[in-house]
Length: 300
Image (tube, rainbow, N blue to C red; front, side):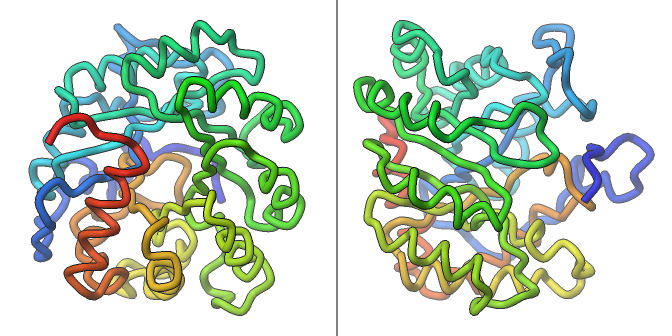
């Protein structure tokens, strides 16, 4: 997969500006649990060591997307594009009037005072990347040493890893003293099906009640499928997770879809939820009850 982020010459980038309106009506207080914001650069500069430069995707465009999709709550994940300067997410949280929370990027030796400050302004966890395309990836031992300090401020751990690393990281992660949220269904290759060793290892990890999974990225783990195929391989795995771990799945759009092979239509991604969580109760649990409990939203 290319590390480039979609630029202004990408003909499919129109979906960033004009996604289709979903047919599926979402329940009240539905939460998009995984998005990013980029810029504006004049206020929030990109990290000097970034490997790609994205189009600006500021909070105003995110808020407009959610109004169109019928989404009332959100968790914004700090991107490596902005590094460990979390101000861009902090600014969006402040503008979200309690409906927007965040996940920070920090160094494992981040001071306790900064963790406490982040928690007070609306960050609910910290994210670490174990990905080839990300330089200077996290060290699992250092991350595990941070976990007790996260517990002290009521934060959880979010991890993003290459699918094959599930076997290597499972042991250390099982020792976490805080809940662990796994990004994008462990980045498995959905075309290999539910019996593949990486997906089976993800299932075993989720047998631990401390673990949660984001059934985001059906378009990433099935990225070779043309849009008209509706990312069906990804849908199959997401539905299997929701049906088996109904109380520990959350969903995210991953807007504005950085480091991707294409820009998916967010209206299509929302409509696929009808297949991922095929009953009203499952849909409400995935989009409302689970994120409310995990992220501790304070406003109705």
